[in-house]
Length: 251
Ligand code: GDP
Ligand code: MN
Ligand code: MN
Image (spheres, rainbow, N blue to C red):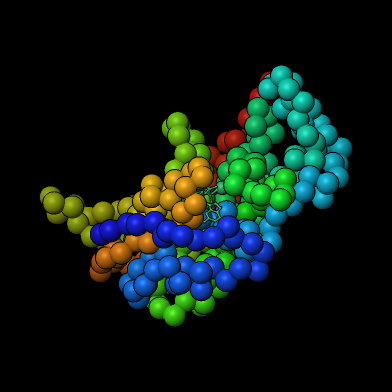
């Protein structure tokens, strides 16, 4: 398998046709997986926003004040308001905002970015990244799969890495259940989150700074002869970690 970044993409603006811009720079193949940083998907989908768009509610004022005390610097309650509006649930309000986005991804600040955003205060994540992936894929001349990625932190480990927010043309996961290990033991639980692994590989070549390479192409990846599944976001009723965090309070 080969992973390379697409060079020479312009600064992405509202309304841009990402599929066409990508295909101008690289000859895609039907079996490719195109990993597109959510930053540019959001830019094309007009998800730029200003703090002034988010007049702070009392709850946002409270949250900003709490975080401000911990951080020992004043926090803008309008940012907390933006996070509240982008989420269905806050698992932490302090010392930072850990939010479940409307489409089910759990991440700090609901994934709202303040870097690589000219002409606006904030960049919100795409509203529905799977729909975004489908739209980009529909716009391609080839039959390549599309994964919309973001850089995200994770619990238990330092460091951030690429994850898949939405995908089209490829199952999210490769189901190993029912297959066997080298001793003939049947695998009972392993469902490999393939699109996250592809997103992480792409993130390695797209980078985080001013590289100007928001798209990675994974070539000659073989999904293999496995069952697939499309569920990555746990549902709240069976998510034990989420349930435990609801009980936790920082003070
Ligand atoms: P995120 O992981 O989706 O939040 O995106 P990042 O902000 O980490 O950016 C990923 C890559 O895309 C970096 O190499 C950035 O320099 C690049 N990038 C961000 N916005 C643009 C853009 O509008 N045009 C181009 N060509 N590159 C961009
Ligand atoms: Mn991001
Ligand atoms: Mn990134």
